[in-house]
Length: 428
Image (cartoon, rainbow, N blue to C red; front, side, top):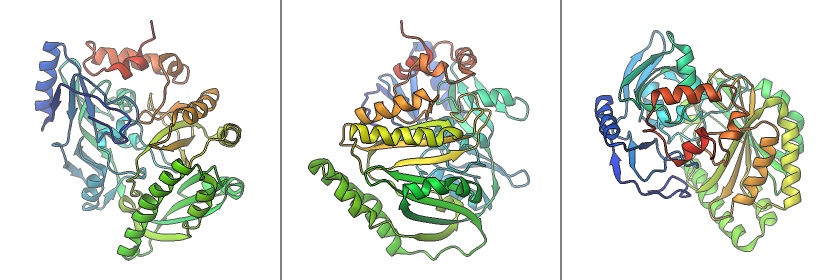
């Protein structure tokens, strides 16, 4: 089996696909008795070894859809395998929406929330903060219901736990009334983006910057609430987006990789980035089509470190002559109380580093990671990183508390694999 990017290949002995919490519980009990382990995936849209296993591999593809809608309290309970694309459309039927989300909607609800997936907007928290209740099967072979109103500490502890505490089978999320977004994007020199980002951060509900280091330019994306009529569907635009953002972009990356002509191709590529504006309902406005395969690493830093860290990244790229047509994606998120959220107790900036799948990403990623580590960076749990226990305990105040709690819920390590053991235990 492979993950989405194809950088992980593993060979599980058994595939599990429960259709209910009770069926999942029975599977866990069988594995406990046989002293076997289980790893699960949402859609495999992770670059780390979270999913990899040579034992049993579990997915929730047969657990899709809404379970209950409380319109008065704006709460939706869904099966944990529900893909975000389906969840958004189903919620919209009840005129409800998530306050924020990222630009990919292929992930399952459980996968997205338990890895700390986020969008952008300095007044908005990561998607995990919408959790109000969860139902999970623990490593002790029990069904645990966590009500955030009665036990907020426990929900904060396990809300971001990337499948290491138990298998989430149901989740209740806090919603808001459905809303439309006006999306504006354009290219400009990065110097201008840096001069204007503080004002834009305050003036816009969402701000995102894509920095293209070879040409030192930025594609800026801003989104704001609007009552304007949604833009008319355009097949031409839809096809154009697919061609430009995927086929053309992949073709340029293949050519750049073979010819090493990154500068000229970056200049050519910029010509296709126009000034675009459109309006749509939020669950349709957030996601973008992403078909081209790439490697990704993403780190969270305190927002006040943004300019300092950015200049170090830029200088290092120039010093080492790293060549890529992929941008560095820059997003902003409000801090939260979730124990293992990268935004734990700090308003944050996220830097996402990308590399075309055919390139050797390691030298580039390793150097960028060294910079992030120097500034107290915390990795996105689903994106590539090479940190271990000692690195993580220094940047997460609740790290040891989490490990203790995790061991109580999974004393036999049914949910662990080699990657997770490297995170939770010191090397001997």
